[in-house]
Length: 118
Length: 152
Image (tube, rainbow over all chains, first blue to last red):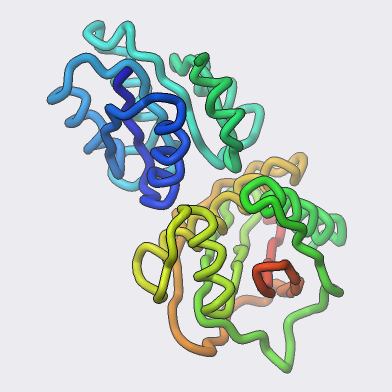
């Protein structure tokens, strides 16, 4: 399984990498903002999951979500928002835009595992 | 400033630290900011905008910040560098995002984090909005939450 972590916080990316390792996921790519995320997606076919933050510079998570869902090449990509935006309206907005699931920070290892459906 | 918000920021901070560190952050007595001003070595700041405006800041002494970020990433942090700043900024971001959800009936946006590093710094906010200071104690050390919020 290949996973792309998109978050402007290197700390969060490091925490998530640490959680994914014990789940048997070692093919992990990273991006620090939405523009980088789209570049990594384009240059690395076969990414299965994208864990996507919302509030980022350059291009935010909702912007990434909409662009990715408008591209049929990524129709099989599972996108999980992983964000401190905890409002119900934000969750609804993300699901309507095409997110497959939603993790609110702070998260526990069990929550990440459950949302990745492993 | 709604008195209820003090409880919101208190309980949100407690919940976040319990989830992220498996520790209890015990709040002290909230007070309005005034002399003696709290000092810190590193502070994460998030702005609020929208139907209310204000900010929240989480301020730590150096050793507490290092212990907390070391715990988060599972590796020792030895100095207040950009990696530690990122961790502290993210902590502030998570507390702010979760507090925002609990503040009912007010549409709020949160800014990207800003982090201040400097030994014994004092935060000065040019605002007429009262600033509430809540001290916290934890097994990893003490820290302070400062927030201000006013409906437009």
